[in-house]
Image (cartoon, rainbow, N blue to C red; front, side):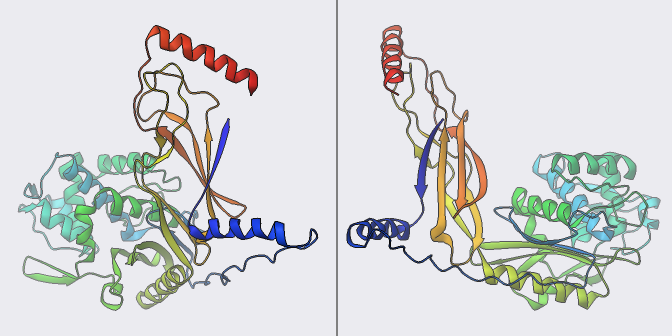
Length: 397
């Protein structure tokens, strides 16, 4: 396995130069002082049952407390309901103009409503807005019946997608979040789901920032009060039942950094807002998210044996972002762990090693290092010549 080190920023090169000069000019026993680091206080403690703060781009968890605890999610359930509608729209299985028949069951569903009428037809557009903005239980049941033929089979779909997304502490029984002993989720899982809502279907995410929606001549406000208080907040959903308490999943973007917070089990509507603000303020004040590599960035060109060409371009197939404490970006380094030997043929996207991102002595993440191009086998004489060269190279190694 070959290892290649890469550092980020001019400061790292300047530091290396200064160290080299110090070796020449300073006594052998002298030592340089350690570089100062940004001081970060302990994260805030919230008046809630469970909470988490996650970076939406990197997936880095900045703060958490009981984040894997299984709790009743109340109307936060509708994040998955809306996600499945958005997925169906994205795949072309339904359109915003499709009309949905309103059943008596949907009409009779208790709790928050968008006030659709039994026997009427409502567009997917209006139902999706009614789910996200008005938290309509009636709208949630209507789309469940339209997409899966009933609320129970729709809940089965919800659970399948929860498993696909890695939501390990979630089980859905209905599309609304109405209380049930076997209906639960966790702060970690809801943050993960919200990250997919934001990143998978950005064309629909703007709905979550709407402050009002009017249907059937009834104008209702979005229950996420942060949309009025903080201009950087643009989603996602509130929830409340006696069992669950007051819950809020929120997302905010400031400059190039987007955070997702989940707060579950607070005592009031005002409390869930204030506790969310504490998390957001802490994250934006003490952390930053940096784009390290563009999608398809070439990180190395190792030797490839027996191919039509002698070098292979390798790099990352997706954009690489990392969330780090503010003031420590100069400590970021990358280590490329390449295969000891790479031979043709090789296909674009094939894994040829790993990219390890480090912050000082801490390993932040390991990502696949892939071939950025396909290389076919060379002719018989090229392969024979490369075999001889590889054998001789191995002797010297």
